[in-house]
Image (tube, rainbow, N blue to C red; front, side, top):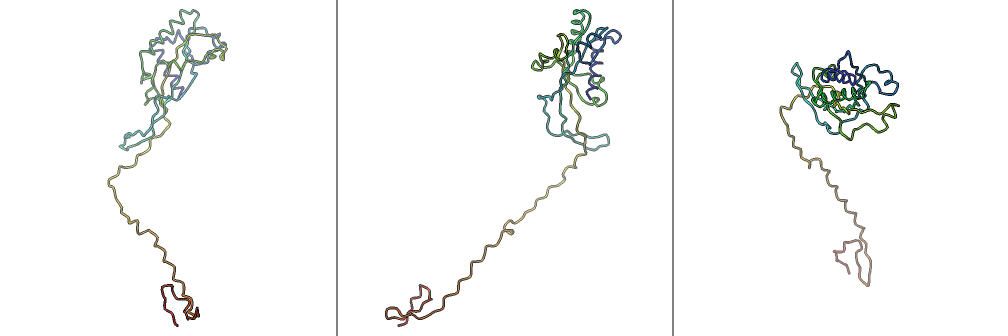
Length: 227
């Protein structure tokens, strides 16, 4: 998908910034010392140095559409990423380089999106935002040292791209009725345990106490005695 963005960006610069293909090259190679030494024509280099998830466009929920055959489809909202390009100009004179950068800057500032007619393949149905990257997304200070090249002025161009990673699937038919079921919760309650059976009474026996005969084994409430 990224190579489609590269192609669209090159076509955009050639048309909107008037970069004549017969006189000016557009390159996406790493602008290191070896590459720079091999330049024989004025060149605009668009080096993709970072791809990050866009924190300002966190999408949630579902998208819905109706297909050409009338089927309602849905899918999760696609994630959005930012492609950060460092755009530099290479020519024999600094004046020519600055002129190229100026025309590219005007073209980017005049358009908020890449024109739809330049988007092909998987980009044909998406909206690609275009603009200068925020200040906090500047190229690290050791960028040129890592490329073994000489420091050059450049533009931080950002392309915002929804990534179509989720397929459309038929949605479930809408509900036509709602049913309610009532259930007696007490019917499932466990019955209370039966109280334990009374222990059998001890057998009665006669005992003489203090000159009187009593019956042992009777409840304490039974005060009957035999004398």
